[in-house]
Image 1 (cartoon, rainbow, N blue to C red):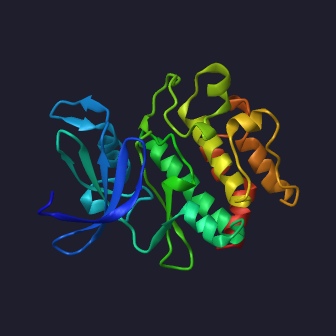
Image 2: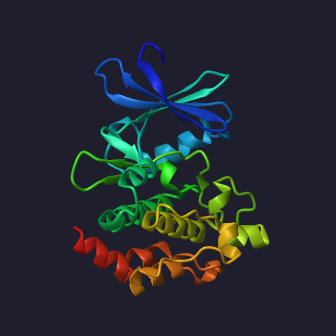
Length: 267
């Protein structure tokens, strides 16, 4: 590892990992290097690999796929016994969606539909490839800012898993964005949860000053901005339906008139 990559500075850290900026020694290609201290393993036919490696390889491709998918591509990984190192492409210039929202000083306005449409498309691609991210939020999204139209990139698959037909009974994502059915019944499914998290993210993008949590939503303490268009309010209401059976599918929200019209107007 040390002969191939150079760590520069820390980007952030979580409960079981820390992330550093770096570059590849041969060409100074920008990378991010994640140190994982606790990881799941899948016993495959040839080797044991961290689950996050498997998810990222399936959805983002390998080193040759850098920059071609919404999910950042995994370039390399190392099992050092005490920890696992994941080396991923680091788009430049880029900023986290959270920081982008903070820098905007308010709602994203004209950018919101562009960002959300890309994210819906990315979610459909991930689910089609059998990957459930499980923790869609502003901190886990990057925006490439090298052009007038920001490009969405998805990071941090540490809470992800393979899509399954049976319900999930353990929620590993951010508790504030857990779907209502998990809080109420202790079970949830991948696709309706992704729609719920997209709705929660849209709520935040439309009003960056407002706090969102599922528990507060269930208590009736989350209110939609009355200045939003009726189509936008209906879109939010559908994504944030308490009953998962009443939420639209990812494909349905992809075709929703509000999303299509707004993205077209701001294109």
